[in-house]
Structure formats: C-alpha cells, structure tokens
Image (cartoon, rainbow, N blue to C red; front, side, top):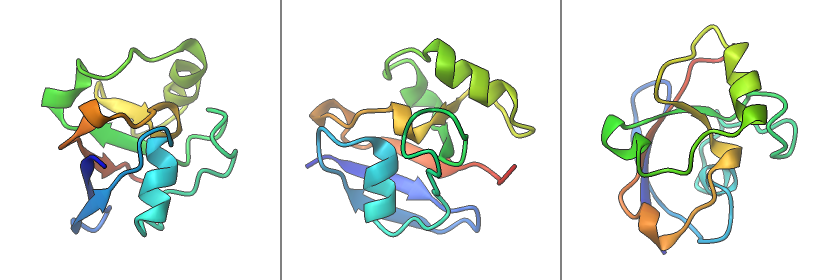
Amino acid sequence: MPTVWATTRGGETRQIEARPGMSLKDNLKRGGMDEILGICGGCASCGTCHVYVAEDWVERLPPIQPDEETILAFSDWREPNSRLSCQIKVTDALEGLCVTVAPED
C-alpha cells in the first residue's frame, strides 16, 4: 500500500496507508481526515474533498477532467495545484504523495 502524507487545515501532517483502487478521498477519510467530507459521494459535484497537491506531484497525476475543473472554478480557494481528491484514484505510483486539505468554501 502506498503511503500518502496529508496535512489538515490546522497544519497537522498524517501518514496514511492508502489502498490502491480506492479514491484518494476515501483513503483520506479512512485515515481519519475528518475535514474531507465528500458530500456528493465522489461524483465531482460538491467540492468538499478539495486538496492542494504538492507542487512536485501535480504533473504526475492524471489531468483534471471537465467536471472537476467546473467544480474547482467555483471555489474561493482555487490554486493551480488544486484537485478534488475524489477524482484521484490511488495506485502504487502515488507512493509518497503529499496533499493539504484546502480551506472550506
């Protein structure tokens, strides 16, 4: 299982053993990241799983799809490295991925 490093809004960094095949959102929630809500269930329609991906990881992830882009466009906290964690499928290639939970909209 790849290790993902996730930082809460309060600045606490947690090591999460992520299960391949699951979304990053589900892995973060399973790892106790209560700030990740995922109200829509992972359909890229609510933005409550918004994270900032560490700069060195941005280009290693699959590109943003139109639905994800649309939801992120509505966020007051959108940054160039913003992603919806529900749209990132965990694979072994994500070993060491670092993300930070975005502020709540």
